[in-house]
Image (cartoon, rainbow, N blue to C red; front, top):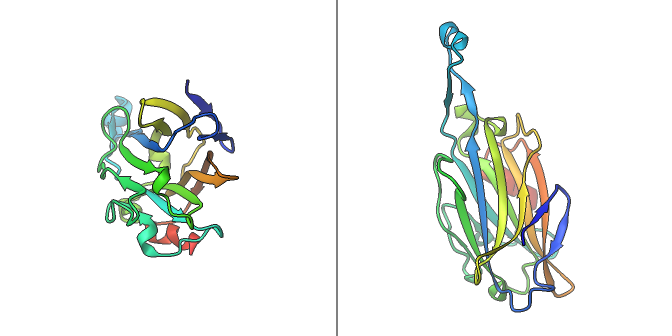
Length: 202
């Protein structure tokens, strides 16, 4: 049964789920309808959907919460970690379609001992030139699925108003006393790019 989380809540993943080693994290979002330009279209209620290229990434952090090496950043330009514990399944350029827009596979038994947190972030590609922010996005979520039986373990619907924000620190999977937990973060930032966002962890 899915546990719906609110911002700031945490749940156990492996405690009570004996043998859980493989997770799928699915992230999704939809473009919000934008009012069309022009006086006549405005009177007629004209709306359209603007393609927004959101990119999900995962940072593999050490016990101090730092990105120890650049290879521990998993994104559209580096889809698989060297250790094989995290694999990004590819980039969705528009946010169109139902269900997950991007998926990340996590193999907990392959996570190196010096990695303690897997932080999921989403940023809008080229947001400054395109003049886009997360106020133009709706229905953003992350869900965590037990890959072996397809059971959804947790879902976090990001319902806050993120207008003006250009990046989101969505959630994290982290070690605690020998178990793995999931935390819903939902923090919006004004970082203009992934490289800027990553600097927070260097």
